[in-house]
Length: 245
Image (tube, rainbow, N blue to C red; front, side):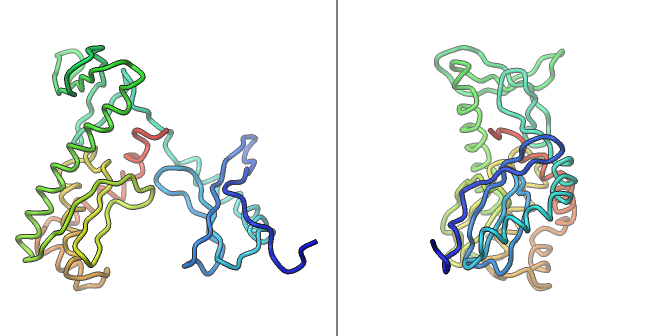
């Protein structure tokens, strides 16, 4: 019998909401000071415990949040897998995904009068999701490197590296060493949204905070920053549904 140490929290737990089982991921964060429940843009609910949190207390906290969680989950968009017949936005324009069945080749953008813009993806059907995701990541990297370099010149800063990530809750991040990370799903958004996130992260090379000085720096390199910021706030969660398992 262990009287002094709390039971180790599981990696996930099940919560029953409105007659269905909801998987809640569990994590312990050294920065957390209290129990916290959140729904990232993708991946489902996450329960965060502080380092010395007790699992029994965490379970009780989670049960008290059932109503809140039910209301939020009702507004979360369903996952949209990459598959033939799906419509996937590319730079804000919906494209129909079509599998060509060809063994060789790369993803190509075509169009038809009936279906509009088309993303033609080669390979076997079971490989289509990975091939399309890899192509979209490459397109995202190309666009984000270009826009990051543009804003870096305008602000007089140096970028060390640019990488694509699949963060569940962030669109980008910047280290003091000049390394920028971006969520590749930005390629699904209109160009002005991707441009806003690039300007945002490059501005962090001068201001590693979200102070008034930071926002002034973003606006200096992108005067129309409010447009991209507002779009992302309104539609960002929708983008996270694409390509999710």
